[in-house]
Length: 105
Image (cartoon, rainbow, N blue to C red; front, side):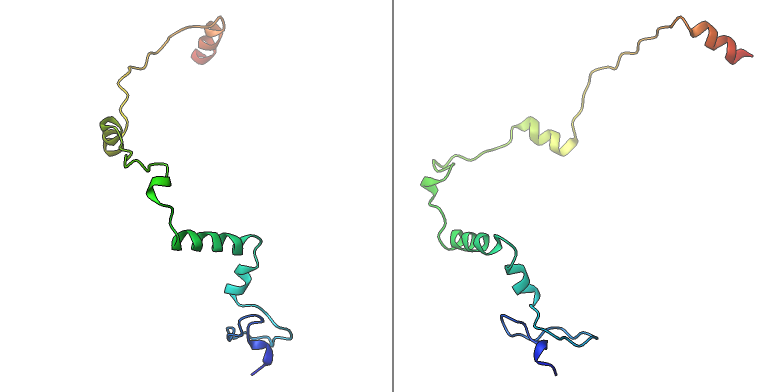
């Protein structure tokens, strides 16, 4: 057993490795906390979970609920159907005679 087999911050045992550790390392949880801004975001998120915003201060505080229109619901279930016909334009260029002659030979 090595004294470096424990996390530098939380002192939990690290997973075993083949090569002997020569300095203190951090566990995955403590390394994740070191990411810039991660701690602050986590604290904001936990604070919002503990103290939710009252409904009267929310965007939809008046009790209204957003609902999809019947057309949108039908479009999601069946897919969008476009009933416009596709028009084709047949035209010839001045080079078409040369091209047709070369294909025939």
